[in-house]
Image (cartoon, rainbow, N blue to C red):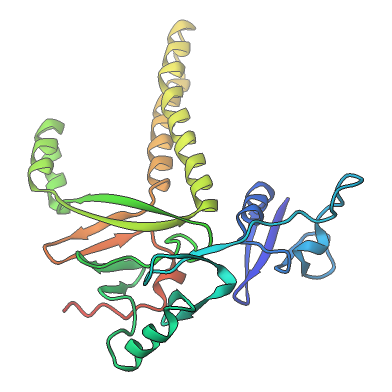
Length: 271
């Protein structure tokens, strides 16, 4: 069963029931969030469609309080006690100072961050704001350090000379960048599922080889290990938190960031 829910006036979905429950537990879907699924006549508040609890128990589950980390003071506050200023959520105590800086032209957007199509462009000194890079929520975040690697695509040509030649050259010329990003608890759960599936597919490959060899299979089933390997590689790539599209001495081009995170950023001009 798939669900839909409303966020910032926009319908989100379809969402499988298991993921929907995780979003509700994480606080992304609150009791007053409008939701809908097939069979319902109209959109209703989430609390009104929750199943009745066992006798003697409250009718509605109490969702955990969503929290936000203020990027200015580093404190953690309930989501209802923060305000968004120029795309950055800050606490009430930091609001006057940030508004003053905004009026004086010291900040208009998170410093050192731009967008280039679907790509986040950031200077090496930039601090990524406390918003989930996959869904842009500011609730129940986990700060994660990422070290990204990149080399020019032309290096792949050396594969013609052999895998070892490519690996050695790639290690020599690659560029690195290290920074921190935020991810919400719901996306942490989804990413763990993808990682687990990638490992399962990879481990299933030698098992399938053993079974095919034991039964002396001589037909197209020998393609199964190849299919499992390709599926494992694809799933592994899909489980990446973020990835590098390009790295130079001054900036990093980061893929895997959601459009909602990028929409308030200024356009990259190449300067």
